[in-house]
Image 1: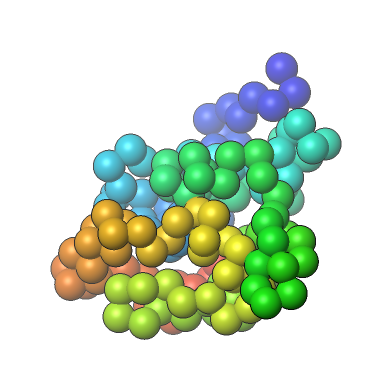
Image 2: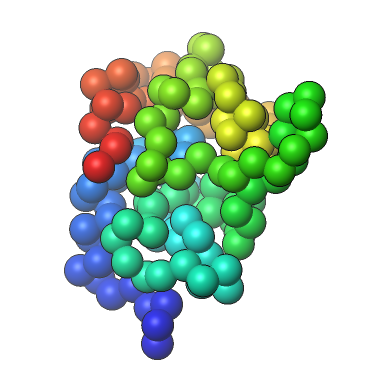
Length: 146
């Protein structure tokens, strides 16, 4: 099947991301439902099952994103694509303010809103992970880009 992701490809995607969700940066070990391989551009939109179109995503980010590729954002209310871990640097679109992931751009705003980075439950879980010293620092963020 064209969309199947075998164990070797999953391992490659996971290792490239340092086992962090490439959207919200939670480590796979700190998730309830583990992480999955996400098609950045979904198969139904013509995306390929190839490393350059795959991201490591926690269950929450992957479910909220679904097959969406973007949303309307900002004051312009124009359609913008979501953050793409293969093209974009995380710190160019977001910053961490205590426990909250704050968008810096319209791409960041659309992504944070649709993927629900800052809903109450995720803020509480992220806070616990940060307080335990397990949320990535800037050095980890720098490695998240190919």
